[in-house]
Length: 284
Ligand code: SAM
Image (cartoon, rainbow, N blue to C red; front, side):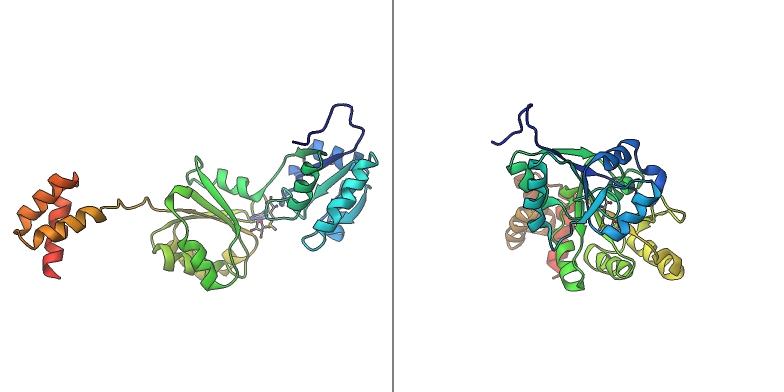
């Protein structure tokens, strides 16, 4: 295992969260670190320059995005080896959360560099905590595929044990995405939609996927901006396939009532439920 020792003279790599809308959410520590480091690696330097100017931060910026981050990892390591401190920011929120930086942090950790998080806003947690959906267990799945077929495949792979499923969605796909969700999970699956959080038009909508679609279709303003979608999957139906198999065999020899009673005794399943199933099987 590679670790950093206390007398290491190498610089530190800071991962700094920036606001997702409301500039008051920029922490004092984040601003101080960004002012004090030697370099800031930013997803989009022009975008971040505006934020830095607003706060009077004049640290040098360089670009680190999806297309160059593997190359930049060794460049950043060389800066740190020279004793320079470097901070990473993304366009908004917490870097690495559906944003660049993973390859750099993974590389720096392997090389034993000091990586320090400076926490702050992230759309994921900000949306979830106010959603009213279960928070004791949740799964963040980033952005879903852009194509409907792949999106439906991804949705079909979800299981209730994931807890609340949280993902990011764009204004262009929000209606298609809701339609796919209804097609895969049915019209009554419960959804919370967080839009433009921490901004002027912050909106939380809760309801069935059918209700949310209706609201967005009737008011196109509700399709504008940035979204976090959260889905509460229905509890898994009990798997009683073994009981049904036994019931089917018994039905060949016995009347419905007796077959259901015997199947219930053998499997421990509820007699009433098996009786209803037996009636249905008899009709087929
Ligand atoms: N790293 C960021 C974070 O920690 O939140 C997320 C970056 S990801 C590229 C951008 C997506 O996050 C947007 O497309 C949207 O789905 C979501 N998002 C960011 N800011 C948001 C906001 N204020 N309200 C709702 N969703 C937001």
